[in-house]
Image (cartoon, rainbow, N blue to C red; front, top):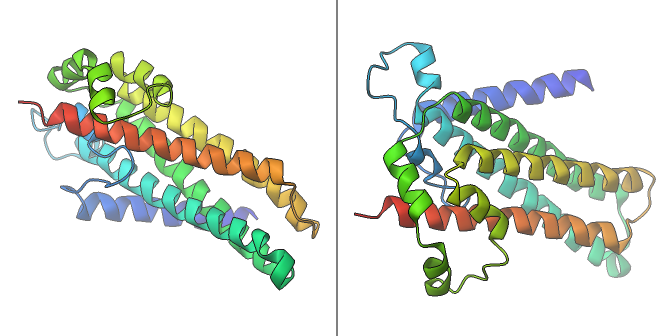
Amino acid sequence: MNTTKKQLGLKIFLGVFILLMVTIHSHSRMFFNKGDDFYDDGSVGSGTSSISIIRSNSSIRTGIIAGAGYFLDSYSDMILLLNKIEMADLNGVDYNDLRATLYSAIEKMEGAKEAYTFLKQSAEITPYNQEKINRLISFDYTGFQETEAINNTTCKDVDLYLKAGDVTGLFGKTLSDMETILGMLYQVKVTIDQDQLPENSPLWKLNRKYSETLRDGQYAAKVFYAVTDQK
């Protein structure tokens, strides 16, 4: 088990490092994209040391991209698991197949957690771009939600962070949400490892938590785009 965890940790580290090198001007498309724009880009007095790379917003961008990739892959596995459970009455239950899908969802969510841990740590040591943070604080959230037909009750928690200019805090909230999802996945694992199908309630709650976390990330991305595109 420890060997497996070490191998996963090495894969995540190498993946994050490679992403840092090759996606320096890229953005995650679906989940908190543009969040790195609210941090200093490291161009003033940053030099070329490894510390300056860590303290630049490129490492934040890398964490966002890696976290989004792992999260969406995990959610895809979770939907596939739900499909297999739904079809069990017709096709029969293959617990080895269910376990393989569930274990994949867990492994990828562990990857998302590690990427967001990296992201949060990078954000905590990187100064904000205060001019853009001020735009975030003064942004017309009510008008934006009305224009975009967004239910303001669904983004209330995210707004608390954005209106305070606390982008790093929002990353921390997402990390906490991922940890919650992991706990729920492991609860489902206990049942499936006993060759039993989970009750509906924990599956419904798990799917809802995935959906809410994705919704929050997408909403934040819409706000980040609107704010950074302001003239």
